[in-house]
Length: 191
Image 1: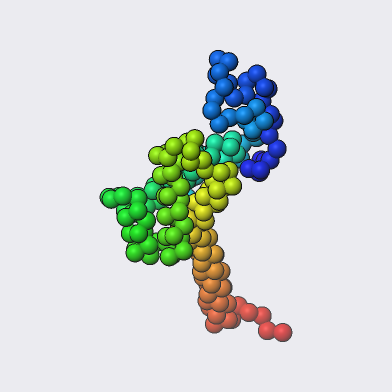
Image 2: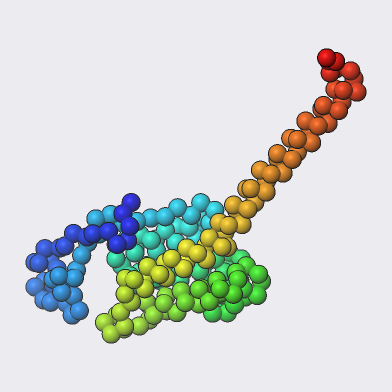
């Protein structure tokens, strides 16, 4: 899939920036664009509902729907808190409780608050006077990715590696037990 900065096709001047022949404020013929391909991301170790929400943030970003991408990133952070049993209070309180519970580090707490601030701005601010840039939206979605990586994907990866190591250790112990039993029973041939 194309990266969020992939070139876009320009809309025709007739379609760009107008509704029924009227110009829309803040939209020019040269800045309105359509993405060629929206981007998505796989969140294999993240609970399905949260992964879908996070993927929607990426799809919105790929479509250059900045406010939508930031709002979805905020929703993914809130869903993460709820998934960890932090269901009551404001999102600010939920993020702080995630950190207090050891689910996120101080750095991730600060990142989650920045996502919260941007998400609030995306849905409550004046969309004409307080515009979130594409670059800021990309950074917010990247912070969301990092939060999900730390909370879900890294622990799952560690668990897989640990399980693999323990399985190797178990096989080695079983092999050693089988070799010991074989030698006691005289099953090993002498050279």
